[in-house]
Image (tube, rainbow, N blue to C red; front, side, top):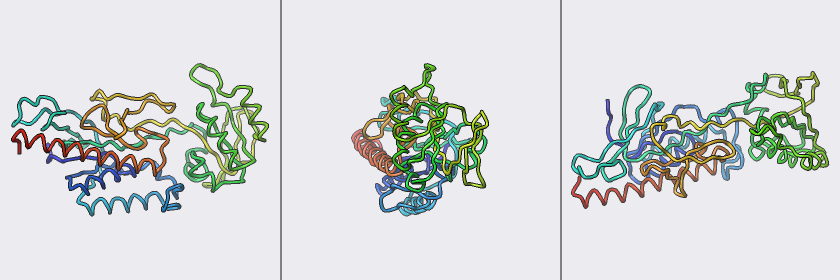
Length: 332
C-alpha cells in the first residue's frame, strides 16, 4: 500500500533527524520522521560539551526535540525502513523521465510492508557501536565503560583510567586521556593495523612512558566490577589491574543498509566507509541528504544537530526550486 506523498521524510529521530525535521516543519513542509526508538546515546545518563544543555539526559533532549518538531506540524512515527527506491517523473510531465527532475520522488518501504512516497529524504540513522567481545564490558557501557574523552573525561578526571584498545584508533584515544589523569593504563593488544603491524612505534611508546603511562601488551580477558562500576581489568596471563573507568574504541557500522539499492557515493574514513555528502549534507543522489553519525561517526551532539539543521534547510531550498520548475511547466 502506498501512503500519501510527503514533502520530506526523515529517517532517524535522534538529534540530527529532529533538527532536520524542525527546520522543515518551520518551512511549512509536510514532514514525517520515522524512528526506530533506539538512539545511540541511550546508554549515557548525561550529555556534556553541549552549550546550554550541559548535563542534560540524552532522552530528555530527544523528548524536547520531538515536542518542538510536532509543534511545527511534523509527524513522528515509530517504524523501521526496509528499503528506499526511485520513482519516475510525474504523469503530467512525461518528458521528465528521471527521479531528480521536477515531479520525481522516492519510495520508502517500511518493515510493515507499507510504502511511503516522498519528494526529499534525509537519512539520520546514526551508527551501531560494536563493542569488543570482552566479558564485563558491554554491561557497563555508558556508565563506567566509556568512549569519548571530551564527553566523559571530566567526570573521571584524576582517577585510574584504562584504555582497552580495539583498533589503531585506540592510540589516539589513549594519548588524549593522559590530559585527564596521570594514572592511565593502556592495553595495547588492539593496536594492530590491517597490515599486521602495530601503530605503536618505538618513539611513540617511549613518549607515552615518559608521560607516566603504563603500557600492557597482554590481551584483556575480562573487565571486573561491581554492578555498573568498573573495579579492575584482568589480562590473559591472569594479572589484575585496579581501574576506576575504562575507555575503549569499537567498530562503528553505519545504519544505512536500506539504501543498498541506490548507487550512493561513499567516503573511506578511519572508521569505515560512510555515505559521502557535500557542504549542504546532500548525497550523490539529488533527492537524498544525510546528516549526523551515519556520515560522521565521531561527531558529537552539537555537530550532528548543526548538520541536521543544514540538511533540513538544504532539502527545503531544493524543494523550493522544484516548486518553481513545476509551476513553469504547468504542473499543479
